[in-house]
Length: 155
Image (cartoon, rainbow, N blue to C red; front, side):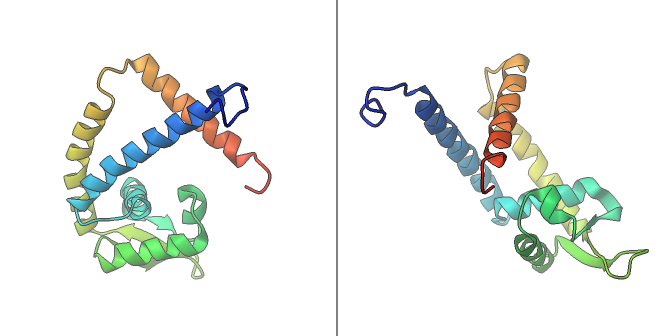
């Protein structure tokens, strides 16, 4: 790293490499768990969990790109995937005829419930030895990093 920075401070580069390594490890763990539950992509899994939290009301497909931080096209594709798998369904909005809602199905709820406990066990193992304060700081720093990325020109 010192060679790359021409003798300059390497801490920011080392930190970025550590974040990337940690993110890849977490994603591998998530993917392994999802593979055992049907192989949903991380985006589809995140969306399914959002729909589970939304409950019977579901979520407006038009609002999903913002809340899930994906493109409109990607959100539509993720709902398509969940619908094909029988985990979610589209339904017309009750009061706005132009709007469509995505709703989790009973099969989707069963999927989330089956995924929950192994996820809790995996997160317990992943963060074994971390104190509450360390986890709080880690969460804060990761969100701060994400905010910094979003504030860069072109993002």
